[in-house]
Image (cartoon, rainbow, N blue to C red; front, side, top):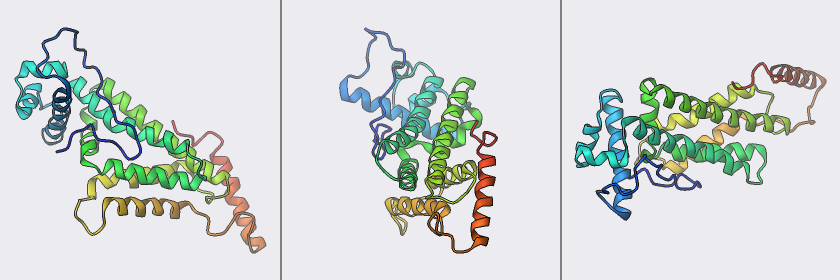
Length: 255
């Protein structure tokens, strides 16, 4: 398995966090080899957590899988929680970074949504992100880590909610419920990690492009704003928008 230090699409490299090591500690490896070993520890731990469960996996199991002495692994990660915390950050932080990067680009609202979906699909379907591990292990996460993970999920939902709302207000998207749409789009993108297999008819890039187009098809207006053909259609559209305004006044905002 590749190391967890790979880059997300158009994102910066996710650096290794400090594991609480003290200066002068007897380092079992140096330089580039130390980085490779730390990444290998994460990879092997991810596989063990996914197959055995977090509770049933010990640091000794991880050390054995990497080929380290149990005492040596403490140099990289002092406990399982530190190891799991870094794994989770390696999954959630790049996704939130995708939203920030796309938001900074000068794109129309629907184009932003398309680009976010495309990048998320490329990210979660890459095995090195360990997204499937995180999804499968949610119920076993220690309380502090579980709370941080939930905060990250709410942030991702909120970011997509804002993009959908922006597209509606710009007249590019239909009068849909932004929260429902945000859940639908994120779920569609994230689920790719479970069903995509390399070597299929379509490449991951082609799949990402198609899912991004599907997200836009879900939102895009069938006719331009302010160009309604009949009074009945105009009345229907006004009612849809009034209903949407009622839902967007705070009752349905992401928690």
